[in-house]
Length: 276
Image (cartoon, rainbow, N blue to C red; front, side, top):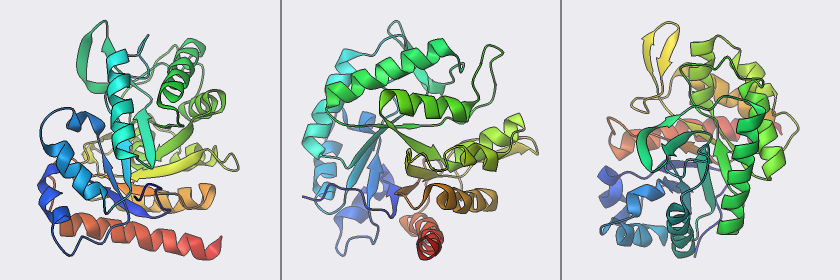
């Protein structure tokens, strides 16, 4: 059974496209990513197991809440059972929090970049990796505010988290661009931080909504912008080609349009392959 995620472009598998991936001939894409929380109940897990026979699979969690004071043991058990059942090539989560004292918030909330947050996040990542028996990747957030308490820049915080915990980084290029626009920092300087560190093992691409010139919302509801394409090419030159995922979660288009975005990413990656 296929498990390793190739150094190629994949797409997020969403409900409107299930039928496409069950038909013959199969859509031409290298790998698929799903949110594990969508497969806790219902018949969709059996459908995913069918699709899994033909495509390498990545699990990209949104509910573990690595930034919370403690992890939910039941969620960890669920995630491990899904990993054992699906044998995903990659498992990833977010540098964020969404759970506190049994209260679940439908968002990925930011952390202050402090030593206290760093220690907590490292502890939770190490607990997750030990429980799952595998390395995970953590994703940089999109953000709309900063904390006066922060003593690290986000990019340095991400490096420290990965270095101390033993995890790797899922670099979301759209998130970098959104946060850079909202907070006024240089996105290329952010990405330059990872040069030579061998920490970035996956990248994400997505669309965003421009509220005004200096404020963007990461909504995953549109085509990837030219600015994000340019930043993606730059990131590949810094970190080298890695598995790349095209996300489109809202206003989900036809599979043909989604695969068209993936082909654009493939062309950029092929160009980088030729120069490294």
